Amino acid sequence: MRKIIKIEPTEPVLPRRKRVAAYARVSMECERLMHSMSAQISYYSELIQKNPEWEYAGVYADNFISGTETKKRQEFQRMISDCEKGLIDIILCKSISRFARNTVDLLETIRHLKDIGVEVRFEKENINSLSGDGELMLTILASFAQEESRSLSENVKWGIRKRFEKGDPCNRNPILGYEWVDDKLVVVPEEAEIVKRIFRNFLDGKSRLETERELNAEGITTKRGYRWIDSNIKVILTNITYTGNMLLQKEYITDPITKRRKKNNGELPKYYVENTHEAIIDMETFRWVQEEMERRKKLGPLANKSLNTCCFTGKIKCPFCHKSYMHEVRTDRGYAEYWLCGSRKIKGGRCTVGGSINHKHLQETCAKVLGLQEFDEAVFLERVDVIYVPKRETLEFHLKDGTVVTEACKNTGHQDCWTEERRAATSLKRKNGKRPNRADMKCSPFVRQYGIIEIYQLKSLTKGGIFMPKGQPNKRYTPEFKIKVVETMHREKLSYRETARQFDIPNSRVTAWERIYLEEGAEGLYVERRGRKSTGRSPKIKKEVEEDLIAEVQRLRAENAYLKKLNALVAERVRQEKKHK
Image 1 (cartoon, rainbow, N blue to C red):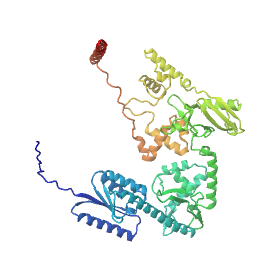
Image 2 (image 1 turned 90 degrees about the vertical axis):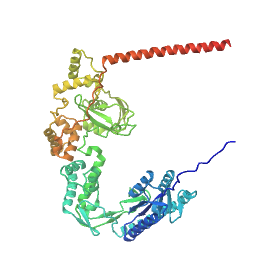
Image 3 (image 1 turned 60 degrees about the vertical axis):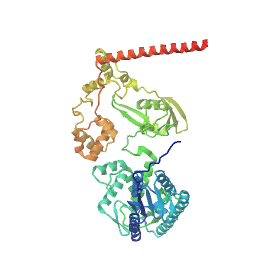
Image 4 (image 1 turned 135 degrees about the vertical axis):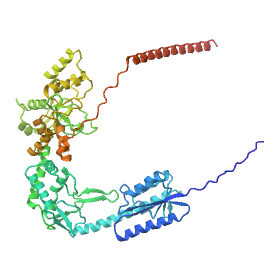
């Protein structure tokens, strides 16, 4: 019979103390709640530290933050991160409403903590998240907490709307040109001049983009100290507060849980309060600006003279992507204009039609459809409503009289770029015993083969191109030249396209130089900026090593063939033996 001997442990296993933390939160800034917050922190710190089975892991507290969202609560997020790192075993909280007022967020957080073995205890409700009925009780009570938050929100909304009815604004948002003094708006003279300038520029015919460039070039910032963008200009031009009157409840919160704002387009009443403060812009000027904005809106891109627009802008549409075709200029193989579907300008965007439309051929096709000897912009705008591109190299003209005409528009870009210069470069390569590169023949914009570099270098020598030897600064685009381009564009109010044409450079260069000029000043254009370093071709294998590798490959192939034959003989032998049995 077997004899079993029990070996007792030589060292006693000491129970590990639980690492316990607490979470506290208040949603409003007032003396009473601040006292409540400090009382919670003191209470939980003392409670954890006096328990011999617990190890103090800290108290996490969020001040003046709503419980309907967890993303904006920094201390809450830090606590969850520490739990994931294994620094906390138990979380103590006064009540469910302090932890979260959003049922979905609460349950997702509790389940995540449960998966990593962290227990949450709610003192007021006496609930333990790891107990059997803990999640059920949490779901019910969290719903109550969420509805309580919704009820509080409705009460606050009622109070705000009552203030609106009396003509009292409920918020103190910063407004350029004014400053809040007690409950009244007081004019700030320096900022008021900027506001007047924005309105004056718009009535003088300048676009918002031109005003934006002017202000940024002069170093003028917004009320919060940021660079100007188009939306800032639009907000100022449409803000009736500058007339000395106020329009209340222009926006409202659709859901107190998600905090989603929505523009009030008639869903709720608005309150117009007259003569509440000193005006910066008179009402007549404000109305002229609104009428001008509506007129430009109807014109679309054609109203913005700072954009590269022409008669085709907004007229050519893709029936699949529902995007307008955009004008592009190619300068790497001579100057060429073409139109491209707008979806292809978006990162990752693809167009079902594909291809591009040559600008010159587009004009010829339009003249043919309209029965003209030469293309006329005025006639085109008068008679053509829209042009659809149902498939590649096909245009569908919808005229304003209801007629629909379909006409082919061939794209001969490959033939057009095969210039005399390119022919001479290819002939030179042939004389030197090199075949012309296929990528070059197809006019590919990418250097797929090594031979195309020679053509570009030849172009650089013959026409003063932009390609310079590695290690040398770009002689054509000197810092003085770059500064001259940007300053000329600002001084003469030229568009990117007009500037590029005047100086015979790509649009991308102009935009890049202007960005550096505005961000870093003229000194930034003196810094030599290069792209990523080329690693070059992989080093060529030595001839002796190459021969050894070829011999090894041949040996392995022969061995593989021998093993296949041997396998076939064995299989045949086995088959014969089975047959004789």
